[in-house]
Image (cartoon, rainbow, N blue to C red):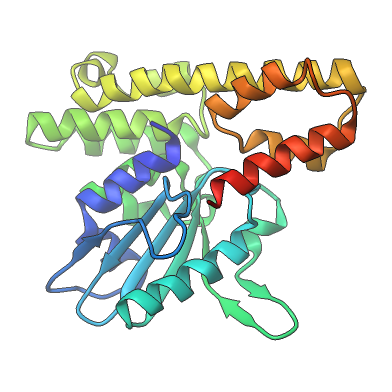
Length: 281
């Protein structure tokens, strides 16, 4: 389970709280919509669609700024598809979880010669921690908020977690919190405040560990492929590296096998183009 997917789980488990936070309204009814839209499917692993009585809230959680297609275009694409399918206004918020200076985290529109499409970009490292410490659904995001005292912030988070009366909920929220805090703090530092025994008892934590091992295998495959490419072609251009980074584990394993047959940079580009075209089928 990736960092942004943890946030997706939270948003779909506590949709009313997320709408109250992002739209500043108290909805009477909220429906979690499926993430598959008409036309060809979009990779929607970190996307949540919440429908209230009069609009849809599209939340996109991001730990990386690189994507294919680029994030601003994806936001336009989602908006058009949602409006076509549901015929209601769409509010879009991209939530960047990990601090970065990349301009994408500060971009709030897609612009070409004929179209301008706007959405909100929310950067967790700029948010006031007070709001997140007082709300169960938002508490796991609290470690990512603005602070001048990391120790003080994690201490407050741990106190808020300890106050959750239901044991199962407390375990799950602790697990979510520990994993997300890893985007900002060292594990040893986090464990000083969040008790390991509570998290290990959580079913959610065990699921995260298992999927984290799978993610680790993907990262190993990525490192292996980049190493092979550098050995075969010398230093690889960053634009090609970015295209390799978005490949899934199966594609990376296929690339590892294909490198033995790829004799030129043009062959590599053709292979990458084929993978991207296959995703759009």
